[in-house]
Length: 593
Image (cartoon, rainbow, N blue to C red):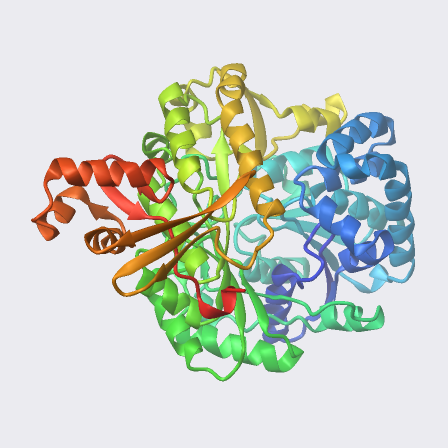
């Protein structure tokens, strides 16, 4: 039996698809299955230009709008409106880009012979739905007897059922982990087994898709290392204008899995992780096989204990590896330093909010102080920290906006977060209990009304929802925060000495010199000597005021309050009303000019 696995735009072009690589490696280990993997997104990136591809893939909606124009020609004008809103710098390129996508897809399909394949599988993750539907429609028109299956993180049960009920091109839908389910589906197609419980067939619609229960979960330590050979073959055939970043998996699911806005883990039941020894072995194997040193962890959040062991082992490895990972806020500088020495150079931390009460509503399990401490540690260790600040969360209050503005003033020296409007994700806790968050009705998202013709949209159960509640009030309430985030971003974009921290500390033994850059103002230099120096250094990590008083017993509480309040007003210290954190950092030597 021979099958094809396809990953469409808008996958990140400088990464092979871990979905295809993992499925191919597993099926090849089963024997008697020939697997061909294809990455048409590489050809699209080359055709439209890598910069344009980057701009489009950075938007959740822009790429979908381009394929909407191909899949639903009658909807082209609405799709154009959406694209222009999402990528205003390229709004005039819409007609050209649509034609380039059509031509590239036609050329790619002309070189394929899917008559050889029993099944063609599409991995559908973020921003790949309409591209996959369009390509599936073209394949089905030419090869009507070739079965098509959809799977991937975007194929939740509700969306999957609605796709099969709405579009005639996919024959099967797999939800949850794909390795065993796809293998079982192939046995079913060969007449040697039932339809797997994680699959739905068009012939058996309507029908339930079983939950991905624990007894159907994979032991991910037993899975083979992903096989990326086709990606590199395709890349070599086009010339290699970049060094790829290799996706790698440490865990499945999320060990926290409580955030009220999150719908990323509907496919998993439970949280599982690989041993650090196994991940070390995979990193070394993939590096040798593909001569790459940059790795991207696909996890929602690294498993803390195993991650510490992994980075400790990698710190002793002679390879100059560099890693990106999504992590929870590190608990202290020792942990963060361990990660950095083990090669962690870029992180995404789920900051999400800079108001303690809002963080509780979001069920983040962290405080503003912990978030700011994480930002400080990353800056000090020259680790790039990416994070979002969710604005307009339903039910947010004026006090939460004021808390956010206070915290934003403190984090000005650190690289900026991205402002992201709240969206209602299908299956998230907010979606499950909408009235608890002041949501009166759940609707189709406004952008989906531009992507799909009305009759089609009414039949789909898509992952991002619209809603009616206090949205207008929230937009108005959060405008000052949005403005301050733009000021923050502009400050860092315009800085002359980007390799130096904007708030930098140098210790003279008996005194400190703190260099402080400010937006559109001269740089200041502060000196703290003697006891003032000792108090400031004591706040290098979050420290409650009662512990400061206990440590510096010769200082009266009124004097300490006056001193600390002065530093807060100057932007040198952050206080949440209970504890204090010094904001100036002593950078790594290589990060200084």
